[in-house]
Image (cartoon, rainbow, N blue to C red):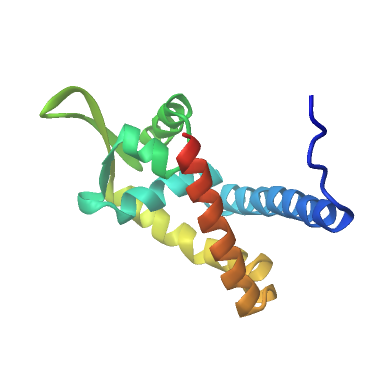
Length: 153
C-alpha cells in the first residue's frame, strides 16, 4: 500500500480555513433566512433555481441536480415548500413517471423578499471582504472543482 499524499502545513491551513469558513457561512445564511423569512438555505436555493427556469418550473430530477440535493431530500424539501404554498408539483404530461416543481406567485414573492436580505448576508460575509482578484480565483477554483466532481458522477 502506498503512502497518502499528505497535505503540507500551508495546504492543511488553507483546507481547514475553507472547511470551517464554508460551514460557518452556510450556518449564518441558513439562520438568517429562517429567522427573517421562515426558509432554510436548501428551500431558498430551490426557489432560486425555479425562479431562473423557463416558466418557473423544472423536472424534479433536474432540480435535484441543480440544487445539489438528493432526489429523496428534494422531495421532502419540496413537500415543505408546497405546504407553504410556495411550490406546486405537477405530473409531466408526456412522461407518467416525471414530476415538475413549479414556483407559485406566492413563492416568487417570498423569494423576492428573502433575496433582498440574503444578498446583504452574502455581501457582508463573503463578497465585500474578499479582494476582486481573490474572488475571481475562488470562482475559477470552484469551476474546476465542479468539473472534476461532474467527471466522476
